[in-house]
Image 1 (tube, one colour):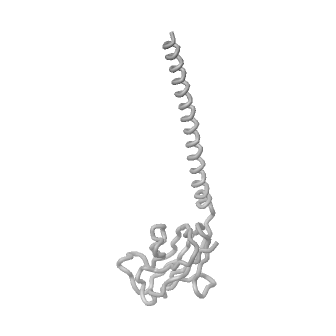
Image 2 (spheres, rainbow, N blue to C red):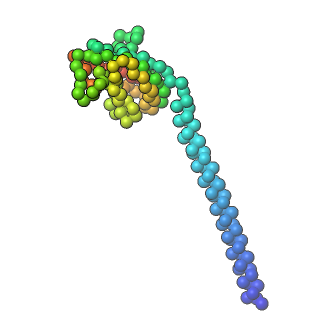
Image 3 (cartoon, rainbow, N blue to C red):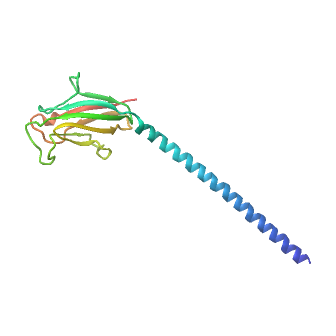
Length: 164
């Protein structure tokens, strides 16, 4: 009789342990789900905010004398905020050379080190429009023409300042 009672007690203990483990696993699963949801929310909301901004428009001319020009500025400089969405409107005209490495592109609009983030654009003859997100890291960036466009090409550059 004792062994039967012990067997019943052992069975009850085993069932309680299984129920306890199952309840713990369920709580742990919910915790993981909530943590994942919060983490996802923390990542997506800032991205949505960045891409939902109405882009600021910056107009630039890439001219026949192989210079970048910004209206009202002697030396072209643009100042932007980190992760700011910018719509560039760049009018491009051929200089006195055409670069076979950049067919159909009188000029380019490039920032070394940021090419993988879209900062290497072929500027076709006429109006070019594109949207870019500025770098996260504050500092000064050199925007330059990489398409050999003629006399003055080596000096065809401008500055972008990323500041809080």
